[in-house]
Length: 217
Image (cartoon, rainbow, N blue to C red; front, side, top):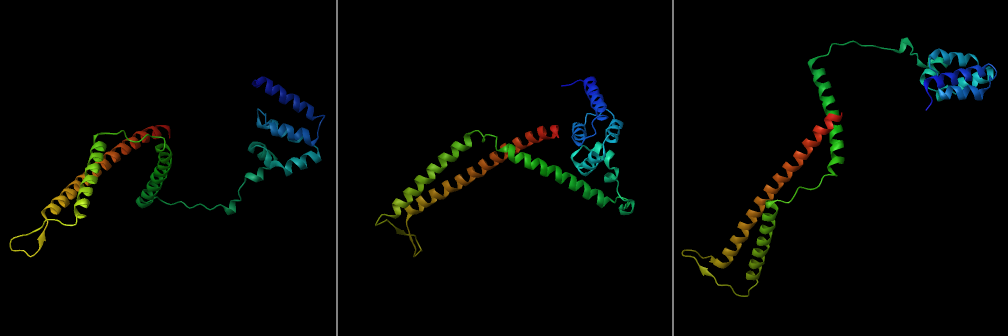
């Protein structure tokens, strides 16, 4: 990388050559490099252009840096005064509240977008006792349902008539159905507990990432 002195000397050399070379190519090369230490040097280069070079540079001025374009055509950066309209108002509490809300929403939307991407890189929650209990409950529930199904498929089942009732009651079937219900309730309870643990795990991970993310904003 050239030092500042080398750059200045190079520009001076190029400027000196401009008095010999007023062609479009030389003008374009110097302006594209934009090695000017001071803005006044830009004007010196522009003043060296012949008619053909100047017309080409002016027509293609958008290809150069802003400070060069401002020297070529200052009107590109001037706004017609008659088109400018200003309205000075006193901010109300409602306006301030709205501005704060929009600012917070923009912040939260940005974080949520980053979190969605980051969460894909996080491993699932480690296995714990609740997972084993849920597996055991599912196995018991499966067995209980199979036992009930086998019993109901028997061609004849013992039944008795409860005292004062005309409805036949099968005590074995009732026992098996009750066993299924109990295990189903236990399984549902364990499922809810597992969901709570999952929620706590991801909430913790989200809060941890939020602290890291905010420190880098």
